Length: 602
Image 1 (cartoon, rainbow, N blue to C red):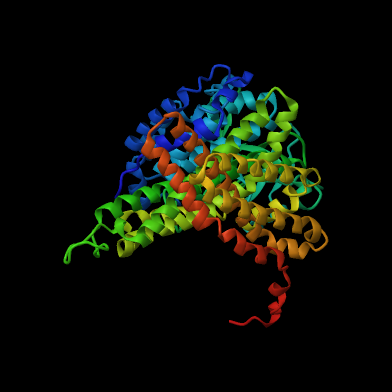
Image 2: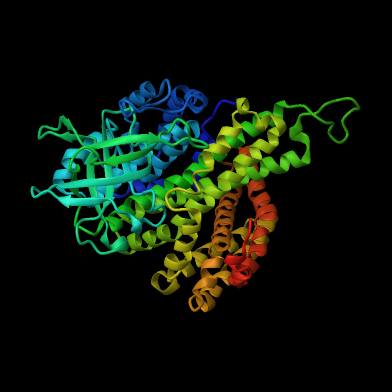
């Protein structure tokens, strides 16, 4: 199995050339942040990830999390407890959170860089900090001062972990159908009764305390999502001095047997089994829980998109290493009887280039959105905060859905590069595919992300947000022209793809608004188109930046020329798919009902 190497050189390039760390360091929130330290932090965390976390990835997959029905507890695989303790002791969980709650106070962008390395090294392990991160975000935004003082510091440090409890057996993506009840107890607390499923790290042995954020209905709540409230339900009640008190009435009753992320326990949680209900504390106001939960879910969706990137990077490294070593077949012009490394064969190179191009496009997109989150929260100019927030809102469903779909494609290609050995578990690449396959499903299936894009995000400000984004992308074309002949193929392919995306977008405004069934049928191919073009735009920006660095004599020449070649490959081999998506977008949804569902037979 190939050892993981954090892609520090590429991370540095994206931070330096596509993001603006200097601008972030000028914001009051990050006044103590030195831009030059971002890569140093990534390098240090990379060493930790390689030495401590990556060696547990394969063993954790084989051993898996184990549930004890007698004690209703979960044991993580061997080495996870010790690794988590080192993760917390190193202060890594706290990096992107506010210093007033014990955090490192660094930009969210830097946190996402570390999250990529963490997820590439060990995706199952990364799921615990990811869920804690989401719970922290929600409490920062909507918790009372007392709740923040009680729960945030130990959660920021990682000493306590957090979860989000939305899904129920009868209410999957349709969260409005949940039935968990929250009854006022008369003392300001509530009693929670119900069952939640698919709760990541709902029970484990990494930390003593688990802080569950639970969606439930109070008596006489309105139906649907308008009647949902959010509650803090800790595993152990917290004493006034912050110590852990008696056990709350919340239990894990089983864990799922999954296709991948075996070391990450996916729990069925039961609230109020042995009493009138688990003690819960209302976050904010009653019936506002769904609005609060979206604070957590939107950033969680970016982190899930990052999982597509992280596993693609890991799979690409493994495929590249194998292709260099594996000898099979004879290259064109090689002497008879010689076996050549398979990396010389054009089809293998095509697969590797596809993997590389997609991975670099995903990294650029994830980091671009993460930087936008920082600016939307902390820029001094309210106009800039609003504009950046609009772009983040537009691109979040694209980052989540496109990156996770492409992550599955890239990890599948890694298996193909390995040939028959890729189908053998010992080579490790099958695990990357299995681990990646859940990401298009959770945090809102990718079909839901596509609907969000066309129904909620395209109409933002009367369509001005998407029009401004397309104009910003189009502004790159003159820079491509001025960069000379090397970049002209990129300019031509990107220009055609961007025009096609603009045409499809106009179709939604002119046709989809009056024909919602057609708009919904077109949502997924449109999101795919949007992701392809946005990835092409960001790689084209990379090519312009690399070309400029070469002209100025900066950087490693081989690395920079590879950047340009990767952008050209993407433009010439991946962007042409955009044209083929126009017909599925604009043809409407009638064909989907051509066969009446009542007549479908097995």
